[in-house]
Image: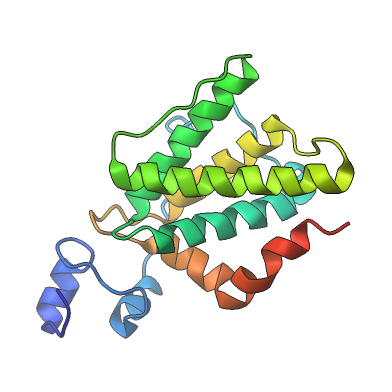
Length: 193
């Protein structure tokens, strides 16, 4: 649906039955009034993985890279919504969990949109690892660090998601935080010594 809708429909159907453009002024205004969800520590996924401030500081470039890559993937895959991003992240997390146990098994989501997001993210991770390996002459990113940052993004998505079927609050957050200037310049700058 492209075009104008009435105010009551906008309020009631926004990101429920209506796929709103990310730059809609009414959607952006409504985002200012949405609150982040409080996560119950007992129900968050991957509770066994502890994400500390020192971990995030140490992995800040990787966190930025994966955030930008998640944004790029979400914008590149038509119809991608927050729940698709969540499913893609969960699938990649499962893959890295199996790698830690010594198995090589790539988990794939059943949802084709989430699958396309996963492919974009996995390609970005592999490209970054290759660049780092070329510069350093060895693998410099530990799977445990990648797993931790992916879990951090998963938890952040859970907090920012508004739970609507066509909701893109997390994608909007990433766009506001890592929009156009960072998309063009930050990722290459991350690999420089």
